[in-house]
Amino acid sequence: MTSSAITASGLRKAYKDKVVLDGIDLDVAPGTIFSLLGPNGAGKTTTVNVLTTLMKADAGTVRIAGHDVATDTKAVRAAIGVTGQFAAVDELLTGRENLKLMADLKRLGASEGKRVVADLLERFDLTESADKMSATYSGGMRRKLDLAMTLVGKPRIIFLDEPTTGLDPRSRRTMWDIIRRLVADDGVTIFLTTQYLDEADRLADRIAVLDGGRIVAQGTPAELKRQIPGSHVRLRFAGDAELDAALRLLANATRDDEDDLVLRVPSDGGARSVRTLLAQLDTESIEVEEFSVHTPDLDDVFLALTGRTSEKVNAS
Image (cartoon, rainbow, N blue to C red; front, side, top):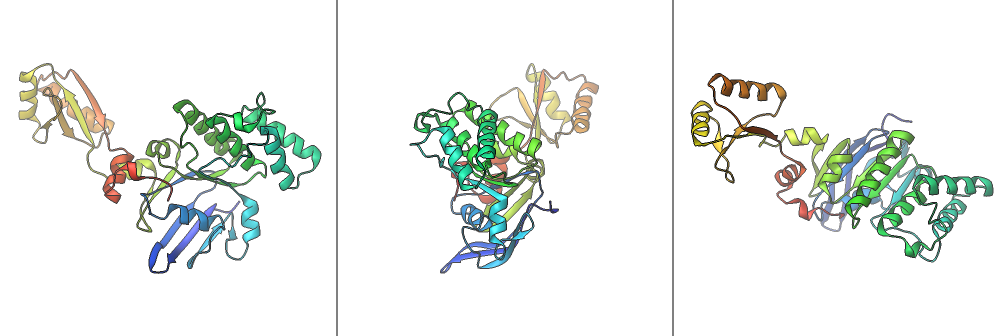
């Protein structure tokens, strides 16, 4: 495999006078999960459409699994799988028949197709319901079947567009486990778009935030969070006397808006700085009843970078 699973350089796309992508650069390492986030209209779906050969860019270059999207489209399509926001299963077929249809489309031989179908049904815990009409499947089962169908051709890179939208919490976690195993066990590269920031936080090795057709930030979840101020230690005291003493000692401490016996102290949240803070209080015999470390989450990052709350995040 090449050193990068997905690369894009100077990617541009416009519809008449509306610029949708304004010089996008991406670099996704093989065997990782990369998540693209952005508010409504940011250009996420356009980016995915270009990367998956469904749309031509006006300018820039894209290589998928080492193949140029513009000049080697067939090789790119052979290397990728795409699972859309809505499960693309045929409700008039059973789960097994849906998978067999994909095996036939991929021109697998009869024996190989049968083996692949059986393996995928077992892997996705669909064996017991394999011969039931897919119209009777729950939302989680349909999403699992949809992803299983994508895997029939053994793609090296999978584009997942909001894979857990509409699923209950248990089904979401099941899907997360499946995605993690695809990367850990099979070495698959995942390009994920999601409207759930906690999903990107839990799954992604790297995240890019797209806004107004441009990448406004890119890095690991931890790196993005460190860009945003607001990390602090919350100290709870047993009474006003202890709290007032701590206020006199800690010049940068402020009272918490929601709890009269809590102080907020700016901190990077690291073990060393927390130990130093507690040692200061201990030296002055100021007893802390409890403490907790709070750091910005991806909601804070998203708001700071785009000026919008995460409620606006969706596939667009």
